[in-house]
Length: 115
Image (cartoon, rainbow, N blue to C red; front, top):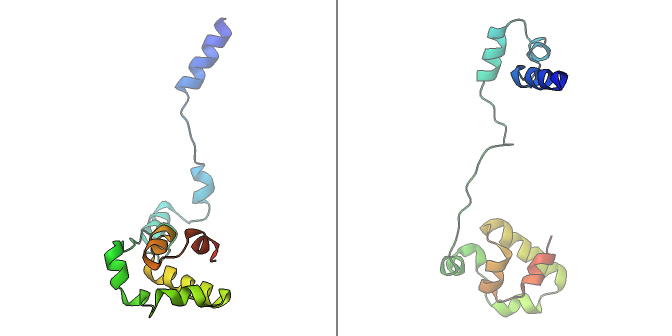
């Protein structure tokens, strides 16, 4: 019993070190070089936030990117042409499939299949 208590105290009191700083600092001459490296501006886009423009259905109908002479044109186009057109509309507006299906009056499953 005493052994278990002392081991649990050791675990609790031990300093948790999640990062091996020695390993990281081996890549740099000194800590100042590391600090200057960390301050450098980068153009990485991995965590950059870019807000999307959200449209109401009315705004979406009025956008020039959604101008289709006739909504029925989408229904009579052959499948590859229609899918290509829908793909461009999705990319330019950034609207969801659900919203585009309401505005363009086509089934959402059609938009879901467009890749």
